[in-house]
Length: 45
Image 1 (cartoon, rainbow, N blue to C red):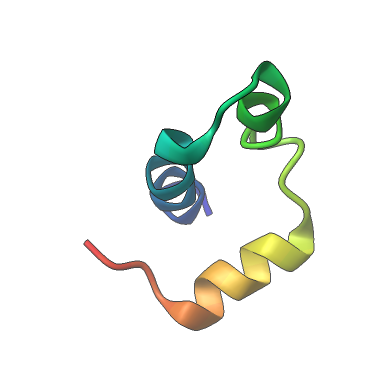
Image 2: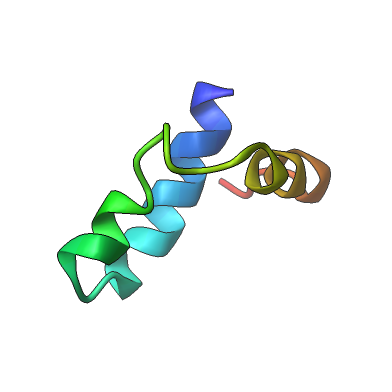
């Protein structure tokens, strides 16, 4: 889900210290397991 991905990126981006950290947040680098965790936890506004 695009909204869930965006919520995760906005949550994790401030902690990114390297280019690799930022690249890990790209949608094709976030695996299905992360998507399931996000959807089961719910997105906090």
